[in-house]
Image (cartoon, rainbow, N blue to C red; front, top):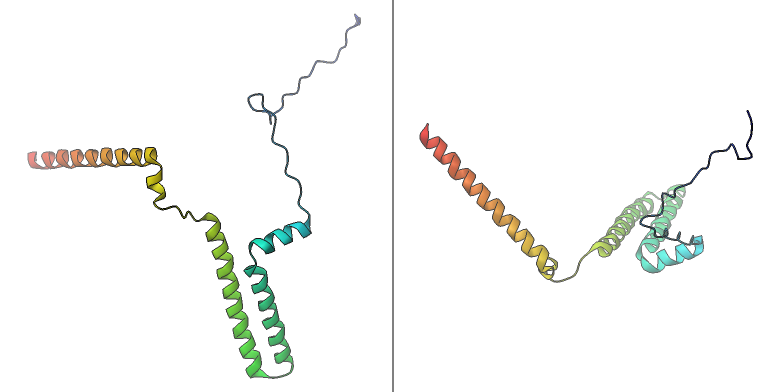
Length: 143
């Protein structure tokens, strides 16, 4: 087994899976600190943390009334807690709906090409359906 001076290790080339069409991969997002994330979330959706705080207040107040054996106040606080939870949930769902809402007037009519293609597809489907019905009636008439 003579070694003629060349390396016996095979040459390995590594292909990068994250490079597409010679472009460089996107840079990773900067990790957001917890304080920054909380500030951003609270400023974008202020009703959700307020609702959580109100719910926590009613819960603690209701438990304190229960401990003090005041059933009327305890019951009232627990009902208020449920109402606060419901309001918080509505606020949360409302914020999600606002993020995804499209407030353009007639969003379908603003994209003329898409509207025309949808109309053409509907017309073709209608024509195919009517020809199938005519063929079906013709076959039923022959039997």
